[in-house]
Length: 559
Image (cartoon, rainbow, N blue to C red; front, side, top):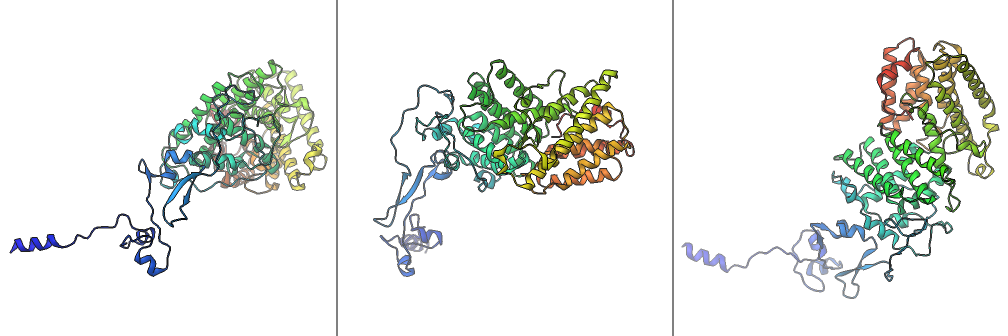
């Protein structure tokens, strides 16, 4: 009996699964008769019938493959003549060009070739997180995020005659950003839209920085890797960088340094400017990451500036058609704040000369008047001698106190010295915020002189007044999430917290917590934690708080 049954089963037609059905049937998981040009089901439904073959490259779809990521000018074109099928073609037909054989003073031979900077005058919103983050997988090697050939792919689409020294054109930078691989593109745009909010005090300041930062990042790998490293630090702080995040951050950080070393071999002014911009970004990443590596990059920036001054090079870079004043501003403000911090600077490191040579004006990048960093450096140098009490030091202290009071009287909102070309870009609220920021830093310097040099008690009227004024400056500022000088007030609030008593400590805690609701960076959490430890050890009297902090070996910068 079994034999006839077996023969019968063999004679029955096999039910095979459709492997080449139309798009509609496969999407609906229905059997398709594969009739051409239209199957019966599509005819009955009145739908267009299409047949497609899904291509995979190394197990991935073409768009997600390594090959597809680098070819952003490839698009899929349907074959309209037959109604089914498609081809891949380039969106911009152009003849191949030979790479420039000789480098210019504007670019490096192993980076982009003669790329023209594009003006950035608008805010950039990051796109959706790339697939690597959606699938909880992170690339832990910088070379996998952005290969050097992808950088060359960007620059090869620019005409050779478009040199760096050419005029700026209001072309959106996304035209070049689109050629970056997805992960690099995401990190770059996240930095522009979110990370910059941690460091930039106004919309105008952000626009001016982007005019330099965007095109230069697309030309120089050192700066682009630094930007991505800072964005990764920020993403990791807010819990949006899965996997081995620290390995990714370290990989981007060292990739930037490796390119920076080659960049420093060039003596031209453009290379030195980009090197300083790279060092600035790396230093900021380490400051906001709460690590001790910020000192290395600040020392590196100092060396670049000193080499530039020794070679009689001016950091304004007249042949670069954008404002690079934010670089000079960043260094002198960072060095001044570091000299006033518990971590401090090593002896003889201060580079006092530089920014004040241009006169007195509102520094829209640093949030203070341009002559204040030099004044703060003098205070910092004096603090280094606080253990040696002499009549000369007392006279210097009194002189600095007098200078600070004179600045407080001079720098009222209605009397601030602002360049005429900035007035049309700054609102009355912006100017008020800048005046409050300026005052907050001046009161911070006064606290150091009163308590560290003058040995005044936290109960002294002068000390309590300075603490109250710093709290009021922070409280009166705009409460926006960034793009306000309020983002710069962590240092004044921290200093006020060291010498605050009673309810003033609670107010400082509330202000820092409020900033931390959107900043969420490790350095801010460490600042709060350090203050809590100091307050716990000195519940009523903070006369010796500075000595207590020195015993704790603080390695981060409350910035």
